[in-house]
Image (cartoon, rainbow, N blue to C red; front, side):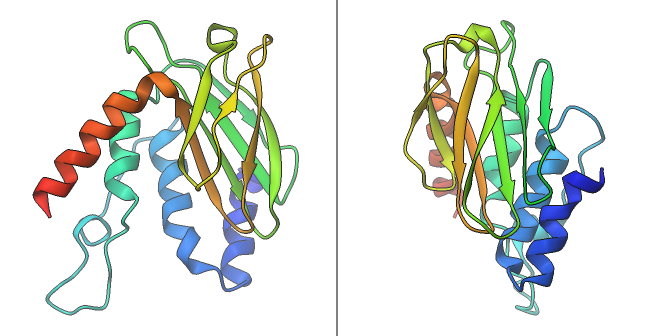
Length: 173
């Protein structure tokens, strides 16, 4: 738990609060353990007072939890500044699987095991703005993250699910 929270604490102490809520919600919503909780003000903001903007990544993270966060989890909490975890997905949820990398201050690359079933697949960076990556024959993949950032990756096969969620969100705004 300590290594999991270290990047968040480092981001706060470094003044990088913009990444804290999306990173915290990635941990809350996409990990295997725990009961997810989403706060109304984080989802919709507080327009009556204007003091709490909505977490813009939250609806996408919620969709990813529902559609992609399935199957066994593999943790990589071996570096206090850059941590990650991956969910392999399962056959019951086509296109499922995801990988999350968090950094508290420096850009880095994290090697994660996303599962042998994804060997040779192209994975897209859904949050973080990085180029697509290809999963190795052993089910491992090297995933970049920016300085003090959050990167979330998913199989290319998940694009229709993610695009549909994005279109739904645009219609609601």
